[in-house]
Length: 110
Image (tube, rainbow, N blue to C red; front, side, top):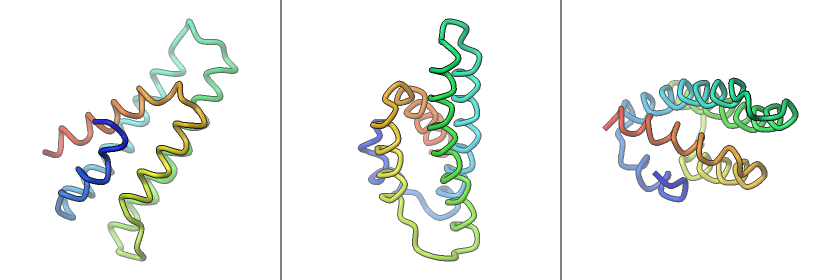
């Protein structure tokens, strides 16, 4: 799934599916991070930079799970998409890993 399709696809999920999607996304972002830190061909500084931005996305995804579960306030899927687009534009090297995490999560839910 392209990141630009995120909101359209996630908006079609019911609340239970959406919660499950975000839980899986948090998990799959840890898989993405593992892929980065275990890449022996990548310099440590590059790994650190990529891990930083994957962590920022993961941080917000876990917060989104909390908001969905408790319905504490409005936090749209478009907001999440915008955040992901912003962080992947700052660190384009993570785009493939993040897109794959989103895709695996979405496919598991549907």
